[in-house]
Image (cartoon, rainbow, N blue to C red):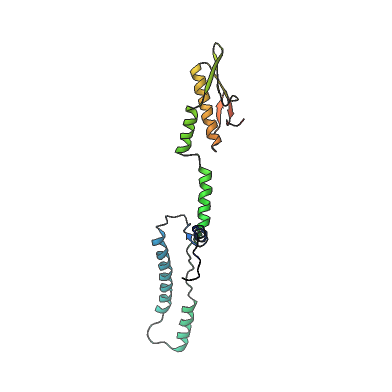
Length: 189
C-alpha cells in the first residue's frame, strides 16, 4: 500500500495489547469452544419450544380473532437473555500476570538455590565463651548470633537463622522460635 507507514514492533505490540482480547472467565480456555455454542443453542432451543407450545394450543382452521390472540401470545414469548462473559484486553491480562509473577517471585527453585548458595558461601566464626557455651556469628552479618552448648549445634543454629533471614529478604514471612522467643530474622540491620 502506498503512503502507509509500516509500524514498528513496539507500535504493533501496543496495538495488540489494546485491541486483542483474552478469555478471562476462569475455566479452561479450550472449554469455551464447546460451552459457548451449547449455551447459545440451548437458549434458542428453549425459545423455539416455548413458541411451539403456544402454537400447539390451536390446531386446524382458526378465525381472525383467535389468530390475532395467538400472534400476540407468540410475540410475547421472550428469548432468555444469555451473553458470554466478556473477554478482557490482552494488556490487562499481561499486566496482571506480571504483577503475580512479582508477588510470587523468589518462592521457587531458583530462590531455594540462591539460599543454598548463600549458606554455602557464608563465613562463620565460632568462639567458645564458657565450657558449655559456644557462639557462632557470620562475618558479613555480625549482628546475627547463635549460641549453643556445642560448636556443631551453634553452627547449625546460625545456618538455620541465616536461611530463614535470606528467605524473609526474598519476600517470605517466616517466624522462628529461638530460645523461647519468636522472631522474624532478616539480613538487614
